[in-house]
Image 1 (cartoon, helix red, strand yellow):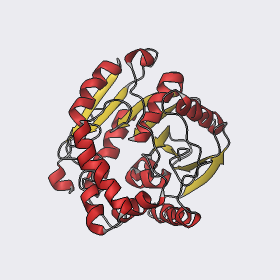
Image 2 (cartoon, one colour):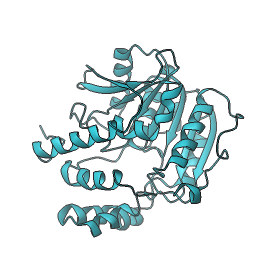
Image 3 (cartoon, one colour):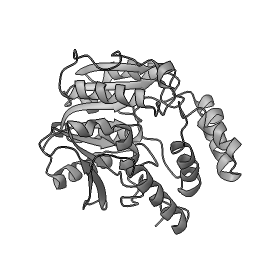
Length: 309
């Protein structure tokens, strides 16, 4: 069986990065592993036990700790379950699940069963958005409210731009790693750069076995049974998932679309700044509590990235 990592030493390095991100959390979290038919699945749990449940699904080559750092403010009001996606995180089984059927949704339904969650709010980011959509297809009754941030599996970007701005720079970095080549790749992926995300992604690109297939695009008929309120957030300059195109198709896919946001000036990975984290957590909180008119610390709607960068 093909492993998720190039070497065992590489896996240990990524485990070190996981602990580094988790150490940034100021609220206690519990590490739990549940068993599914697709392999063991790790979940990072925190927040008040009586709070409404929120399930977080991270992007490709990331982890529960990576995403929970960005959405740590949710731990103040919600019982948060940050799931490590099998085949995409160092903390769960290395099983690679098909992206052309509902296996990801079936896997996540098993995870919910093991966690005792009959229904929960769900946040899916990038690859995690694709997983969340597959749950909405095969088990719509398990989702209370759905928030999708730059989700995969909804729209595709221009092929030439994807090749020249993402695929080729990534290949060049993997073949001949250097800081210059890493920056060339990340400039079309990251909106902001910091001392953790930038070097982490450099290591992840080198140490993971990058053998991922492009998820199939969801079709309206597949979501016919999903009627729960949905929030979709896109990024203006996202190469692979163009924000305006994403929001347009979301209106056709989700009959109960409750809101959309287009993050102006952002690439696929939104800002990792205190200002943006505050805005995003506030936006999600208002959505989950069905309190869309409650004011937040900075203006509602698309955040001012000049203040965030």
